Length: 329
Ligand SMILES: [Zn+2]
Image (cartoon, rainbow, N blue to C red; front, side, top):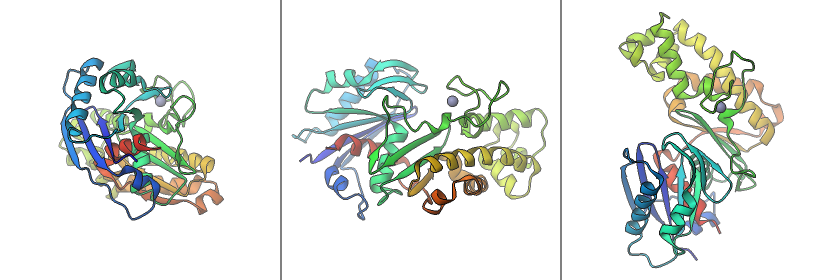
């Protein structure tokens, strides 16, 4: 029985790693009143030198350091923001690391050897799995998690299993199309009309700053101290006070995101819909409008059986979920 697992969160800002004890015990009883605390934890800045070989060297050193007094085989899960191709750990693209077609799994296996079997995961999938086992998804065998941060990411657990799809790119809910035609907003993925291009934090904040700089009038400008400093939290405070600009923006964005959630829940019939991410946690008015739109558009039987809840694991979700995924039998 594996007594330990390592979870790594390879982020654009921080590189975090943690050693966890008894992951299989948690996996054997998801839904129990379980907590997961790392035995050892390390965080450092990702830094500017992001070549794959250099990052792989650093990750391997971290693994050896953090498991220096453990003799067993220790599974290692690495979660990162970006798209995978296939199930062997090929990073198709990662915007934060500026990687394309990097065989991270092979690089890590060559450095770590058989004692540290490596799994590479999309960060939102890892977070979703963590929430499923020890977070807001405890006890739910079918769940959909949607995180609205800089982008819009999703994860699906069905029948207790994480759904990754045939080529490891399932649950990319941010790239579902909500506006059609040549005028639809351009997404980072290269296509137009994705919900991320409307509701993702980066896109939305840039749009707000552009519109306010171009003369749109909103209390958010005063709250932020100038159009260039307006954050979505300022827009939300303005919306709460009845600001016309903020309410018009939300009247456009909330139905697009709400309909996306409704379509996904209509398709999947999950027991729980977990909402998380930096945007929705800082914009209570937007969240409320998104949930109202979701409820209006969702297929009634699926709506009746779903509980809308909030992600619980916070910053630790990535390392926890990666460790648990790697430890799966
Ligand atoms: Zn897209």
